[in-house]
Amino acid sequence: MAVTARLGAVVACVVLAVVSVAPRPAAGILDPVDFLALQAVRRSLDDMPGSEFFDRWDFTADPCGFPGVFCDGDRVAALALGDPRAGSPGLTGRLDPALGRLSALTELSLVPGRVEGELPASLASCSNLRFLAVSKNLLSGKISDGFGALSNLRTLDVSFNQISGTIPPSIAALPSITNLILCHNQLTGGVPSFPDSSPLLRLDLKHNALSGGVPTLPAGLQYLSLSANKLTGTVDQVLSRLTRLNFLDLSMNQLEGPIPASVFSLPLSVLQLQRNFFAGLVQPSNDVTIPMVDLSYNRFWGQLSPLLAGVGQLYLNNNRFTGEVPARLVQELVGSGGLQVLYLQHNFLTGIEISPSSSLPSTVSLCLMYNCMVPPVYAPCPIKAGSQNTRPADQCPEWRG
Image (cartoon, rainbow, N blue to C red; front, side, top):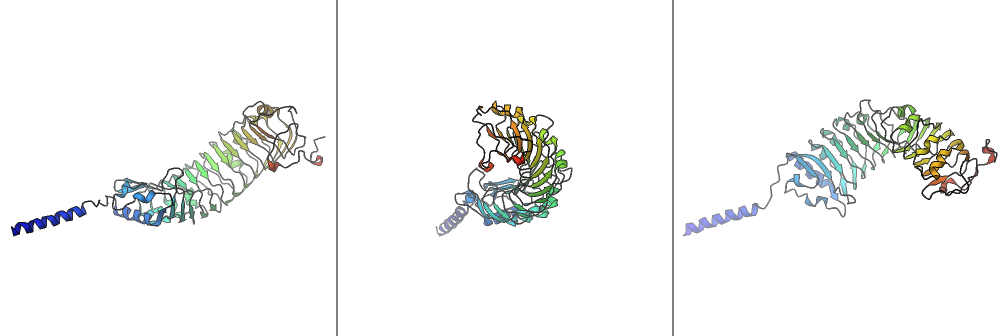
């Protein structure tokens, strides 16, 4: 009986030990290097108030089941940091250099939040990386020249941060890059030169402090935004070869010279060239059907082209246009055609064929202030157009009053 009792006690202890260990889940099958890298990432980041992204990052479980972690076998293949749902709070903290140890990583994204510090240069070690997007945070420092080693990278988006320094030439030389989005930062230096073989489709560098001229760009480019920089020089030769553009914004620079007539034949949704020093005639070769054309605050001169009547919103104000407003423009505006906005203020126009009794549709906007004529119809103008209806006579040699 004593032996039996002792044997029962031993079995009970073994069962108790098994019971106490069994509920603890295994650490998963993730590669140990990736496991430790994820732990480092977690230590360097936290949820902003209202975010619950890291609540399920329990390293006693398989990390491949964590929110935002996507595995291929025993390796982390994609990492989406933060809840991607629109309007949800983001993360705070820093991006740990351990991210560079996720050598199988193909995609890395970070939701808008308050993550600060530098974009880790160690990411250059992730040779399979195809997608890197960390926009709308507080990242600072420079873009590492080492990123030029990411031969598979297709999208680089660091927009709306505080990135400074120059754009490394190695980034422009990436053989697979199709989307380069660096807008709303503090970048200086010039726009980099891209090889003719570049597959680049989208280049967005607006709202930086870039200077110098606009270099020759890949012919396949479809989206180009360089607005709100300090760019100088001419662009007529650059634009002439960009035959596939569907969006063009060069506004708020110091660019000069003419623009090619071919620009108006592109399948553009937007053409924004305002607030530069562009000059010369505006002479499209065919009817222009671009929904929005803004050439305001430049030095364009000559007569207005009737071929612009097919534009939806046309801003030609603050230039040096002369002569009469083409009847076709008036017909499109008054007849409720496609033309909805026609801003012609602050030019040297001498007349417009429109009856003083005409009633403009409520859906259209017309401004004729400060030209070499008395506006025949009343139409509300922007406040910044000023209060003077007509230019002084000594500025209007072709107008007899």
